[in-house]
Image 1: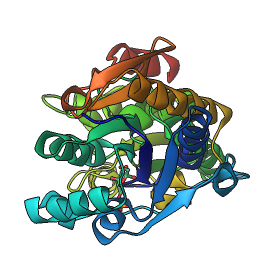
Image 2: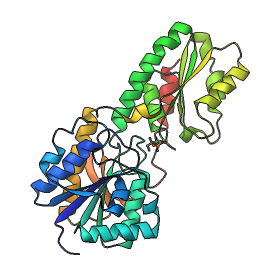
Image 3: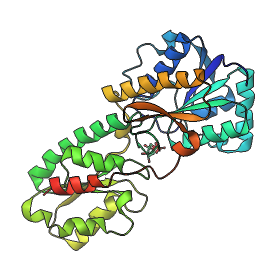
Image 4: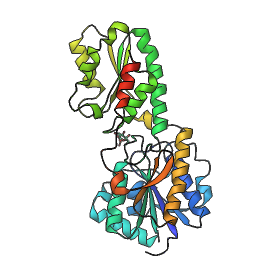
Length: 325
Ligand code: F6P
């Protein structure tokens, strides 16, 4: 492969707080190490259409504390097709981009992996998603901020839950993963969390109700991982039917979880992994995600990073159970 001179950066999939800090880090570390940097707008769609601008360090000044992504983002349907990726590669050649840094979650890094398998292009992933569901990294950029956002929101819900002596089912994001739900439940002092990782053979609501929590507490917060069929509404309806004397409410936090200023942890993770992405390129790495494991940066093959079975620490279920009596 020819010497890498120009690096393209894009953000893709759901935006996550800290993506701007990551764009800044890759741009600055790239320029510091002698590369040209180009910002690609609107994710893979912008790569297909050529929505691209050369970046100097000024393009990324003042963005470290901003939520969202200055590069915009998209869930590109076109890039999922071989024809879309062929067009994207035409842009890569036209723009003389030698390496692509993709900041995004599972779907985005799957796209990067396919692209790298089909074409001679160095793809480096940065873990950017609130869901924390990428394999090979302890944390993803955006996860910590979102945990804090959920915690702040649930602290407020707790006030009204206590005043009215109600059970609240609070639905949080996470797609198919319960990292946000379980850890926010611990951080908020919630009475229970209902998560996909614990759903195979247990009726989590029945188990919670059997614990007789209402005998010791007048109000409860149950954090529920989003799910197309069994979200907060489903569980609230069940409680209304099975325990008609309980006063039940639902709060779906929705997209407010994705916005806001990134936490210090997310900014630092973005900075470290951004610099790590440029180091990876300098070392001749290809088709890897820069992960953070035990506070050390590691290079995880993209094919592994997108695995659906990131280990979930089941001990956290016991922690919440013991703390919520
Ligand atoms: O992957 C991030 C995420 O916020 C998930 O937690 C959620 O399921 C999904 O994106 C929502 O996507 P959209 O913003 O496209 O509705």
